[in-house]
Length: 318
Length: 139
Image (cartoon, rainbow over all chains, first blue to last red; front, side, top):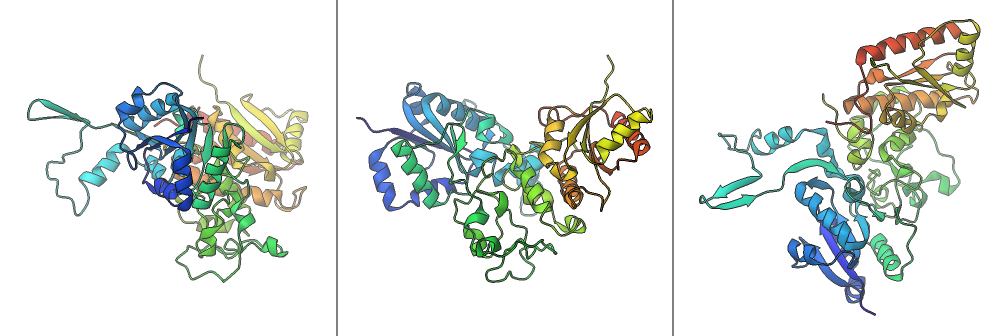
């Protein structure tokens, strides 16, 4: 039997998910021997888009895409990957829900280009030159750049078979996912590859796991306001933690390091719209309604990793 | 045909729904654009319900619950207002007109208040115009 073929594409991501794959350390040797990596752009393998495009449709067994869809190139390769791969996996929170870079949807492209290339203190650009999608060099060579689009999660562009959350996915979770993939023990298509438990259920700070009742939060604090106790629930102490609605495949690493969960793991099973459910969960854990007004920047807290996949999806005209 | 607003009213079974019933019994009139959905308690209303109504083309969403201290389940309405206030803050920051979603406490004996609230809500939404978020917002 020939080895299963694997393809990996990094779209609008930072490469952190690629590192998460490398982080499985010794197991990487087994994985690399067990599969045939036919395409891994732009980070690992030296394969070109034309090589991928030349492969027959459905010839790749598993395709992973990390990063959101942010420009025309990402969109094109996502379509190519979909037609070449039997199983397509959105890998990491950017591909599944838009990720932290999905927050670009809060601004227009013009505002972003202006900030990046014109209107910054350290920028010297008197003619207000902006990157163009095509330019002619020496009067004969035409160079092109992909055009920017609003950030979208992968499933708003092509059909996705499985989702893996995390920013990046924890390497223990990546190991489990690869084991499931290679042994063929996968859940029904369209589902998340997760153990299905929330961060709270694996969190050492959770009072319920110690047999104590969970109390309401009586204050709202930012992470810079003082320091949380050794082993108390961050939410009870007023540090708004999205653990109750986030997948706990990370093993609750952030709360263990005094940082409240920000929801990069993706929604727990049964939740379609992560941000709205997080709003619901956090609001009902506050002691009184005045505390709601003390939450600084609710959009940046509840929509941090999921803006493009949560209602209203894109920013409205102001 | 001229545009008519479609208003979704999510009413709690014990108070606002009874109030709507009373408005009918007392022959108070309110606009026919109102579509009432009955829920056990305003605390049952997830932000997803409001978002789903707006996404599917409702021009306004109105939540009705019991007055404080009057909740059949003791604290459902307290949870409702916290969720509602937080959702409204987030939606406002994202560019949704905050007047498209409203929350009001209307008891079972306030048939007149229900009719007046519906008339006022209908007028407000007519002022705001059609919902731009149908099928998800377009920029």
